[in-house]
Length: 290
Ligand code: GUN
Image (cartoon, rainbow, N blue to C red; front, side, top):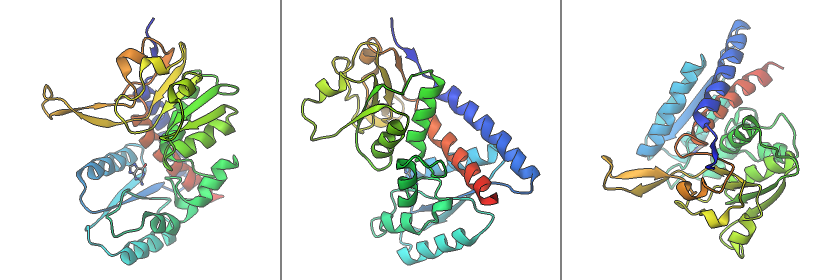
């Protein structure tokens, strides 16, 4: 029997409805949660993401603002803008779209954002808080969204063998900390891992986040495993109008016949990322009241 699909669009809608309700309650108390997104340069993919974030904020009843800076903006000017946003009480969340242009050090940017407004969960203070399981920390949106998908799909995480494929700062590492804190037994795999398929075949929960199109094949998956595909990759496809199609890190049609539950791409993890960003922003606004 093919795996059950975990519907990220439906779950994201539920999360966004919760966020809209919490936002309305804050507005009634005189506080409108506000997210400011800063986009430096004109990368077209980043521009699409940023527009989607602003639109989602407005739909939830929050203030969503985008500040667009030219690609040659000096790092010092960007850091000065962050200082201004840190001091602005109407701004509860700050997100600088990554990657910035080459002359800007992303770590300097991340460190400058107040940890209390770091709704991306990239600041070392939030990384540390999430690692030690402190609830006040902001977890990065994509792995946080994976945890919500697992919960809503009724997947037992405590005691499960979870394998995380990929060790990026944005997904693999925070995914590991969230799973450990949910009492999974976690193995992290990467480009130097020996006999990768043997490791992934031990997974009750397999998280694919390596950015390689259709890398995970059916022979790498234990029958009955839950497979979460974080990948968003463009592959050439002359039959499509745009000349490409989007695939995940999992070879979906094959793995679907082995797994018990699986996220599709698109429509799985992707929609959760913005939903969790909104949730973090509402939390930042709420924590600001305390
Ligand atoms: N670029 C791609 N994904 C993200 C994200 O989640 N946050 C930021 N700030 N930049 C990104």
